[in-house]
Length: 334
Image (cartoon, rainbow, N blue to C red):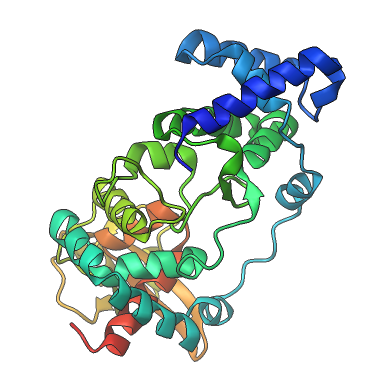
């Protein structure tokens, strides 16, 4: 998987075939595209890529209409917490999480020692993202990112950047770009990193000289821990605290976004009372969820905010946190 010569050899064969059979022999969706030519020129000029190899690579890339349909589809109505939670908090996900934890205990212990992130949160992230590697995506990342970079104008700059990062990571890791698969948006591996996140935060956690988040759970575990640490995870810190509320000013305490907007003392003055003892000056994110038994009021602490850096959603962070808690309970550990 990690031999650049696999890509280079196939590329040279492609060039030879094109010369022998005519330019149309390898013509694909992006062969001859002015946008691709401009992109290749940028990669050649600014990042030292070989233009002929890149052009031969793009001759094999396919434009995927299904990806454009999926990303253009109107967003589904946001589910309330009472419907969202059961998607991720299931007996099967808990049981398989416990199995994953036991199988990779050594790597998880090492990640906690080096990054301060407890095993249950790493396992929960991988569990929520890909069901512990069971569903990492079936699209070629090269096809997905090229389709979105060159045929989806609303977010073309973002995906063009991710395509650039992807090509750079495949060069660094000496892997054929056409062999790697992921989601329709280009998220990759057990932790579903975008290429820019891979290059910024992924780590070679088993020390074999390569970073493989697709088939190496040890590297995936270390990479999730690295991501959390770099986004402010506080070792030993809580994630969220349930609050009791009263009075007429409750709504004034609700955060408008994910960033902590008020501290605990300010929220107390508005009728919010956390169930745990929290410092008055601690900045928190205050939110309300529509639970199965009525409204729930919560305070997201600094580690909660860190989880939202992985996926910018209050309910996502809550699902990760509660799955982590249930994994600990099922595992019988503290």
